[in-house]
Each structure stands twice: as C-alpha cells, then as structure tokens.
Length: 176
Image (cartoon, rainbow, N blue to C red; front, side, top):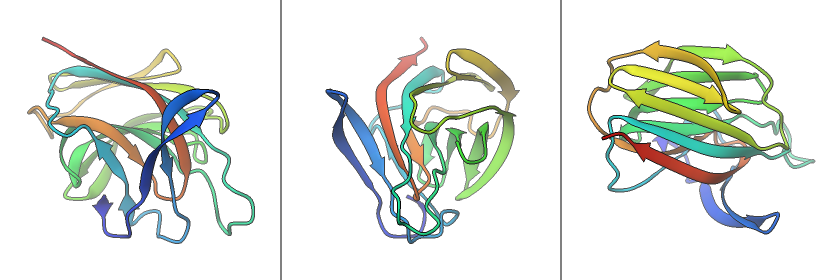
C-alpha cells in the first residue's frame, strides 16, 4: 500500500467462466491517501513490456460518492513508495505515466481518451533504458524519457482504493 490506510483486497474471481484477479476496493478511505499495489515478489526487470487486460466495474449502487477511479501497472518497483506507474482512469479519461517517489505521485506524460467502464481494455507499458512507451487497446499513445529509476525492479498492478477492477491475462516479456 502506498500511503497509509486500511488494507484493500485483491482476490481471484470467476468472470465469464474465466479466473481473473480482482481489486475489490473500499469506499470510506480518502482515495488520494492510499494506493493499493500488488506486485510479483522476487521479480526483477529493467527492460520489459508489461501487458494486462483491465475491466473497470460499474460502482455499486447505494454507496455515497462511489466512482471508478482507475487501475494500472507498475514497473521498476522498489517498494510501495517508489516505482513507475501507468494507469487508465475512466472518470477522468486519461491514460497517464507517473513516477511515485517517496509516496508522492508525479505525472510525466499522458493522453486523454475514453476509458469505458464495463468493458475490457488492454494496457501496456514498454520500458527500455530510460524510454517508456504506453499503449492502450493496441494503439501506441505516447513515449516518454525519464531517468528516475534506472535499475531493475519488480512489476505488478496498481489501483485506486475506491473501485473494483478485474485484471486478466498479465504478461511480462523481459528483454534480454
């Protein structure tokens, strides 16, 4: 968990007869105060392409201020307060690349586009040396150069606390 707050839940669910990882958020925490992260323990890669399929779920009815706030992928993860993040956010409509340094998120690059709730989306981040290439639904969105984290780190998933997102078919292609 980046930041402080009660733990959130990542669990396996069956959706359309397929097993998926689900981030099941909670609705009473400050969504800017905590950022749930799920990473592959023991993984280490500097140069890789990380791809996942994301399915933002319609927020449950009857919960005050419930909205879908996005999910994404992390690379060069050092610890819960230091990593690169690529996220897709239905409510705000951007796909953005960030650094998270000492728990503070800083936007590096992004593109505004429709991120529909209730539909599967492909999200990918290619990291090669200091160049990061973001793709959404099979289309390259942008490239950005950054030197914040130059060494290998773990990789995984990220979410805002106040949402439900299903994740399927994660693939990490580590470059030689």
